[in-house]
Length: 178
Image (cartoon, rainbow, N blue to C red; front, side, top):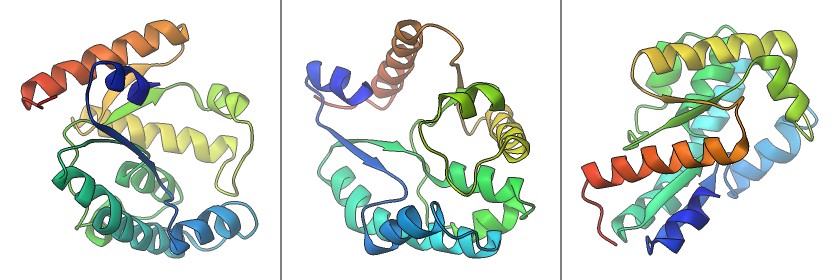
């Protein structure tokens, strides 16, 4: 929805997601998240490898082409999910040291129970206890200023409007040209 709204305003926008569409990302999406549970260290390393490929082959070229890149998930997901499984956040940050800091990162907040109830399908990483820990880490990232929290309990149109206002303010600050 964000990409569509920005395009209406004549911004050149590219949408991307993690895991990516690369062979590593496809392995993560098809095997790791659906079929086989592996050690969180392996998860973190695979996500970092996919992220490195994603950045170098897609995101950086799009940024170099002066596009606004909207990504669904990024390094913060690794911090939250693998951190919730007991890995040190400093180690996760270290193996993702190549990850460029986004101009803006949003966290759409709901209780773990609400988030799981809204999911159409679940991965091997998702259960209530883990999701509660994940949310705590995301909220810590909000407190540290790395993420901007969006209260997602509200009506979808209200949430969409707030996101647009925040994104447009951010674009104005970085003087992004249309």
